[in-house]
Amino acid sequence: MYRHVAGGVHHALPMALTALLLLGLIAVNPLMAVHIQGNDRAGLVTTGLEALADQGMWPLSLLVGVLVLGAPVVRVVGVIAVLLRLHGGRPPESPRSTARLFALTESLRPWAMLDVFLLGLLVGYSKLYGFANAELLTGGLALGGYVLAITAMDQGLDRRALWSAIDHVPADPSPPPQRWVACPVCQRVHGHDHEPPPHRCTRCGSRMHAREPDSLGRTAALVATSAILYVPANLLPVMTVVNFGQGDPSTILGGVGELAGSGMWPLALLVFVASIAVPLLKLGGLAWFVVAAWRGSAARLQGRTRLYRFIDAIGRWSNVDVFMIAILTALVQFGAVASVRADSGAIAFAAVVILTMLASHVFDPRVMWDRADGVRHD
Image (cartoon, rainbow, N blue to C red):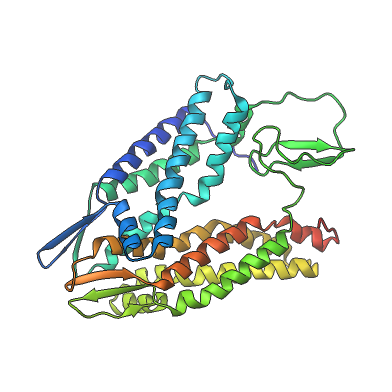
């Protein structure tokens, strides 16, 4: 269903510019400060990346850097560039490059995770309660403002109108073709009767297929790999917290227990849902979809489709624990008084989150309906 958004470029552009300004503030200002026994420490986003790299967790450092700095910056700058080219209501001078740039920003949307990072910051802030004093600083406040601005920008983007403004196609008076294939990014519909469908969209250049190639096989491989990694992700410690010389490695479930034992039941429930329940739901749900499609089952097709959309939407929020570890690793470095170290379980858990997101991305829910009707595209 199409929802028209009033305002279009005029509403989205100010929010995008505001988001870019706030990104600058986030990059150069500390997010939070920690005070323990007369010792003070404040941390930037990059402080956490450096701390993880210094502890030998460079894959985790690289991943966090891409998700909380690289993807958000590229996406916001790209959206601003597209909106400026369309400002004034005139078609862009280079429709193809504008379309490809907007396609890039759309593909980065689920991977730009500063909103999830904000939740990780708040979880880390709460976790410090009891053995340290913590306060949010300019960078943390700017992070909250950025999330509001980027949400307003997304709400103000009329994507159908933008794609039409980038490269409008007039109505074709010739008889309509019998077969159609839609671009998965810009939604342009391409007709074809006597020849195979085009491999790339004529507007944004994205690859097109009637169905995602080998969707079931690739999804099954990613789900199987994720399921294998889910075991060490939960059995191995994700971080070690040392407080006055004492501390033990903590698993994800152990961290939930510590929060519950401290009386922080809402926070414990949040971490449990995001870090344990959601990954299990993704693994179980995607496995169910693949097996049901392979069997050609027509049972609960609508329910499976709705569940797929839910899984696809919430998968990114499982990174809350990963971001919390990056934040605490940066801030709590006071020697024997207090310190936090990331452990190998964090890498396994981050891999589970990313692989299940990729599995959700390559799974084509239409295949479930095709197989139920006895139609195969492979």
